[in-house]
Image 1: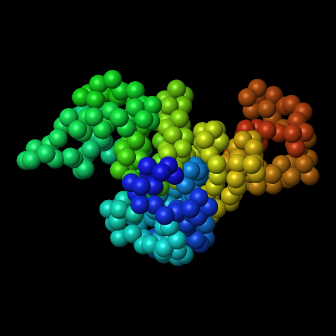
Image 2: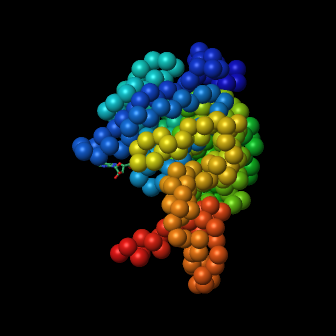
Image 3: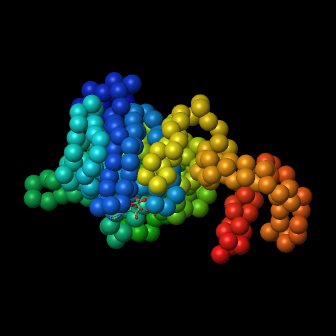
Amino acid sequence: MSTATAERTGSHTTSDEALLELDNIGKSYGNVHALRGVNIHVRQGEVTCVLGDNGAGKSTLIKIIAGLHDYTEGTMKINGIVRRFGSPRAAQAAGIATVYQDLALAPLMSVWRNFFLGNEIRRGLGLDIEKMKQICDAELTKMGIAIPDLDRPVGGLSGGQRQCIAIARAIYFGARVIILDEPTAALGVKQSGVVLKYIVAARDAGLGVIFITHNPHHAFLVGNHFIILKLGRVVLDAHRDELTLDQLTAEMAGGQELEELSHELRGVDVDKVVDVKQGERVHVVAPSLDQEELSEVRSEEAEEEK
Ligand SMILES: Nc1ncnc2c1ncn2[C@@H]1O[C@H](COP(=O)(O)OP(=O)(O)OP(=O)(O)O)[C@@H](O)[C@H]1O
């Protein structure tokens, strides 16, 4: 954490202490166990990527950290102190900022108004517009975000620019942990690149960044630490130096399941499989099948079983 950020937020956290610590966290909705035994430590100056397919429990995890839902098992600690947030406001007060995919920005309001929404600077009975514009300009410039006209409604900006404004705002208002909910999911390659750049900027500003995504390529470009959730459980927890992009991608694609399937194919009479793209029978040795082919074989088998 930079000295400036530490001063603004009153941080006492040392670099090896987790800002946010989830120990054995579980969440049940009645009989549905959305999360079970989840351990995640978020450290300052690190990007912790949480990956998972639909239904893996990512939204539930965000809601717990952001104060929308309570957890039903385990403990959540902020700066080493056990916390249960009763509301999003309590989470924000503890320095947790959440940037949702469908941003809470007002599309018809200007950039600077959005930057200060809910935290306006007042002068006398009115607003100190000049001061807010100045600060907004300085903060965006600090992050390298180029928006020429701060009076422009944010609705006219690109999705990537909007995400970046939300990140800069969270940093300025003292967030220590920022949760980014699939920030690149709806963006093209160029815009995704811009957002990934600001994820790194947030990390370098000393925040603990939680990057929720289903895209291992995006995660690997900026992540220090990778967690894959599957059906509410952590199935992979590794630091950057412990795995490659290929391994992360393979784990996301099904990892263990694919290996088992590959093993099945090796043992049985399937040294020939159908190349579904060509519609021809081709010679394929099972262990050398790539993931795409394996999943095609798997869906074909499922079709046949019906
Ligand atoms: N309010 C709820 N009541 C009952 N079950 C829920 C509720 N919210 C989520 N679940 C269940 O919990 C599990 C995890 O859901 P969650 O939305 O956290 O996953 P996700 O990884 O965010 O998936 P998605 O990307 O589809 O939103 C799912 O089985 C889901 O059906």
